[in-house]
Length: 322
Image (cartoon, rainbow, N blue to C red; front, side):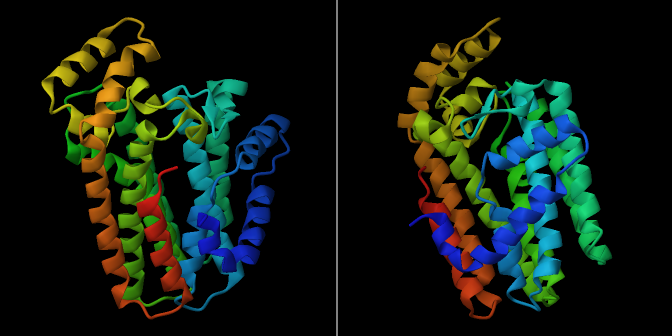
């Protein structure tokens, strides 16, 4: 089953949000308008708006209030992708040319900043100081995550704890905020709001771990980029960290990183070892533990279609292989 089928009953409201996202990023400046539209038109699952809407189903669901939150969170995610591509020097995203590739780094950074600003402006329609505070805190965490990712590039001496803190800031915090802010917009009770936040955090952690696994196990066609691209760009993910316990792999990777100009072929042996030495299974075990906690977080919530859908999404994430 495709992911979109799990939450197909939200199709109409998601269409409203999609239109609002496109309308919000419009600009009088032709370069900003074209660059922003290019990224949005490249697609994406819009999973953060989905979490906003599902969380809202546990309270007083109002599509206008939900829309303000969902659009802002999707724009923050989109802006972070633009900045990510600059940091990673990525030429392709979702099989399409990146903004930094089509224009340059300055245009990409200003486009990302513009989308961030539009996100904050859009949320002003929601008159709730708590929601604004959460959004601000989330953006701070995202920026810290970006800085940590730069700092830890090519660093083979980092540990699992630093990796988990980084993916919390890079991915999980925004999914958790989507659940929490959707709950706030719908006036959900405090205990349910906290439960939804925990669910989003645990699902987000699992999702990113599996993403990092797929970077090694999925095909180039499925990824839209060569397998092992994160490692080639110097990003040390969980399967790599587990593999570095093998001193032969650690020594080989250090030599490749120290080369003045390494090529993807230099990483071939390392990538093959990572795929076959048990690090993938060990990473997936940790992902499963996070998913178990996500299911447990839902237990206090009342039974409704939204709860079943949240469970369905968690199950889908756990089985995701492409």
